[in-house]
Length: 385
Image 1 (cartoon, rainbow, N blue to C red):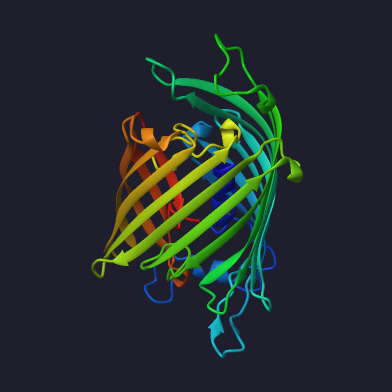
Image 2 (cartoon, one colour; image 1 turned 45 degrees about the vertical axis):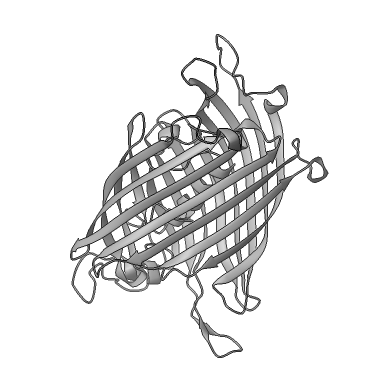
């Protein structure tokens, strides 16, 4: 499930949001003041706090009730840069290994584990994630004739496993490889006046097994809060009974994210994403709109198109103000791409440079969609991928 995958990715990156943490194996005092400006800074903790860390995290996704918490125990291992055969220095991301326990205000919960690392010599980047969740999510019937969209609250009991293995090219900004998604779900349907029109009998208890390929270019100046550079990625997933899946379907994702300094203190960003589903995927794997201010799965179709722009103004020392807005559409047929009004969102936020040596900022965003307000705890960038 794309939203579940993105949730896992953001949570395991949020493990670096240290502080209400327990550190074991710390051999000497590490200052929380930066050596250059004396401000509060966690760079040295991110570099030197080897061992077992317990990190509390806030969950603010509207589709999960709007509020919740997670406890994330994690191990970090830092790698020194290496010099390749061509004499060029290659920087290695730290290995991250940990788990998660999550609970939200609508009684959703999840437990899981993850690892992200690098096999250095062959230049292989990998991610492995697995978990089990009892999740209460809202889905909507968007195509009812002469009626407003109808909300249906469904309970999912799901087991998920995802892995990705990418081989870096001679130019390490380019990488390509394989990925795999396994998702086994049982859906509980509460009593309705009429059953959800989008739920088919085989959806009640189903297995998804998808094999995919991915290719990406990442030229950003850092992976957390970029000031310049672009990231391009294309994903293709294939689901078939040959792989043990209950569905025959394909999915193609295209993503482009770019940043550019308009002035010394004003950074502009642009994001364009598209997703296309082919065949007969289950309703919970249909493309949706991923914008701040819009709950997950609120708008779905066989195709989704999203564009979003943002500005970051570094107005005072480590503090920044954000402004952003986006437009998106989800539809089933290209000839009816804009038959319904285009979905919009906009908002503002505040950031603090919490780890200067990593160019890592964190903060809070407040966003308004077509129907309601939402808020988000942001680590690095809302476009973290």
